Length: 518
Image (cartoon, rainbow, N blue to C red; front, top):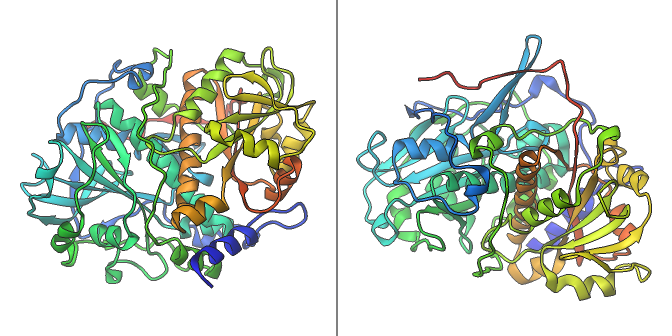
């Protein structure tokens, strides 16, 4: 079976249906719950200085432009603290757990972050490969080397690698977990892009490299350093630079500096694991070059929020329940959220569009709407969706498809979760699917999910900035959504759902700071 056939088979078998969900254990095996923190025992640790709270830049200023800061230990700390770091500790009595700045399915956090750095005072006089440890907000130095690689890029540039430990999600979600790990990689990717703006930096996603290149750079191809069945898979590589639109020089010469054994042995996450052959197959099928449709045009994104950007980032939460009695939001807030979604995946042509179940938006009739992140899909949707849909313009890039109360349908397709019907609106991220994979290759399967995860992360932040709440929904009835829209075949697939409204606060929860001052 070729790679694309494997991907289509995996995607089809991991769909949820009204009478049959994707395969999983069907219960929570608490004895094998994975450790949410990766450590490399024996690696040199470097504590990062905790950033002091700052009123500037504001959240709005992030998207207007912040003056560039130099690459120092302190500014590297800002980048990591507000992207992959801990946002808060939540407690109910003696039971406590951490929340992070990057959202994650089930708060399981399969994504790990690594940085490849030039010489930095306080880190090393050489270039380094380091793992970021969010629990302690520190670097673990895995490899040091000399190179002239950085001379080909703007001063102050660095690379960041994102990887996935799929077992962390598979422990709970079974075969469907590979989808969630890639959504989480997208959340992390967007969290890094937003955090980079705090320093006036730009974080661009690198494409067209094989995963084994990233495996080598990060030391993932050294199996003796990892526990059996707890390996990491390489996902994304980002260039973080003070200049926008930079390109990474040829990575092959750098690989020659990274072929020696790395320091540190990965900690054991679970006493045992349940194997999922379908995940192993799709991991191999997607380990090809991640080619992406590059877009060079710049799209300004505006916000009016004067709250400190750090506060918005740290107070982002996933709502557990929406207040049915307080669903109403303004049309202005609604359009601001949609505008944020349109500009949440920088540098690449969007493949996603939003199908919206509008429940209670000022001046909008309840019903199903379509919001185009890429206007070129309009004619295709008109011919492939139900022929009784109206496609009536309702705002910029927004079209009314059908009026009516679709709360029951929104709840049903979201695995009967009230949260999809009790908010102001919910949505599905409908992506061009088979044509994208056939054009850009099997690695595109992962990056379609990255795109959706990035949209979700930006929607979380935008909702927070507007005083609203949001929640990503990974459990939905895939083909029920497609039938509701009149879609057949694999040309389009719904990959991620989301809901926004006013959350019901859980008064039992106490919030604590995640890090003590150093």
